[in-house]
Length: 220
Image (cartoon, rainbow, N blue to C red; front, side, top):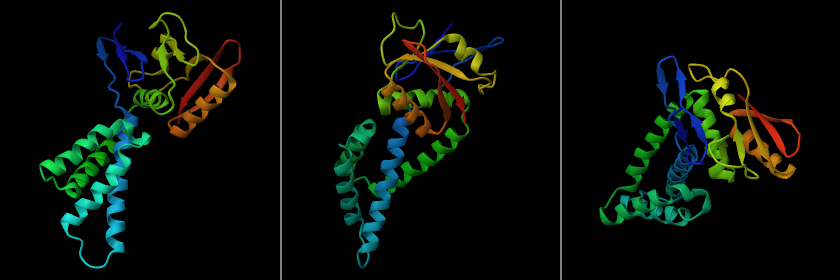
């Protein structure tokens, strides 16, 4: 069976329905969130600064405001996934005289279009985004059972049947998805909080048998 490997190391089987094989395409949702936040925050900072000043703010001064704001933020951990993108943007502004305000509005429109696509995504896409979020934002890996040898502590595992049976031919969830993990109570609570904060799946621990604990996911 063909598989799909996500950025977090999670391996999901290609969905097979009849004679059609559909490879689920996953966006790096965490990277998109960082990109969207930095673009919108920068534009907001620009116009708040302009509003606090008297008179017209020329393009050169706008460029300086944006440059100073971005330089102070691209090195922060919360923007680590888009650091290179925005450093290149600043480089292009300096070398190619790129209008940063205009470029940010172009990027903002792209974010809006991406938001619409995300809203229209199926439950399988949402599941993939959640697994990516748990890894990129919280450091919790997720793997398909049997994809790796052995079992590591604090890693979420899922059996292939749970994935195959959990979604219908339109990639909508039809029954709860189950993952299991060997971890402490603190880690399990942290995972639960991280999932709930993502606001795509409801999560609960349904099995407390040592050493593995079963996590049940139902799309919101």
